[in-house]
Length: 207
Image (cartoon, rainbow, N blue to C red):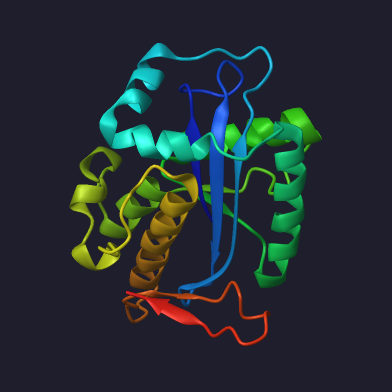
């Protein structure tokens, strides 16, 4: 389960989550479900000047505009997210993977605890870079996306800073890592199975 969070500051509580995206994959690189919400700002939270200056840059301006559309209250968003996560349990127990988990999962965990009083995934989180370091047998500080093997990166999935886009991108990287670590054959693209339950809709492979 890949997670990406966009926020207006470096930590939850003091600052707000602007949006989040979740993408559920099977080990066969099948995208079986996605969920995303754009959130209203949290009462009493501030704005981080450095973060907002970053959002104001031209490269991020469109992503920021998108994360301010169709806003919902944080509590409603977390109720809906929990219901979606509960539904995804038919594929297995969810583990939230963030890049870094110390940012993305921290925001999600805080919001779940604040608005629901519980985390539907407990403490089950995985840091993408930490897992990469283990698979590559390197120190954490020696590993980053630029050092990943080319076959781990789906080149047609750019990092846009739109939460759901990035959750899907990071989820594909995670599956590529998992398959490499388990000595499974690489898969070049993900299969979108989110809509297979709807009539006359076929799975599509993205490469």
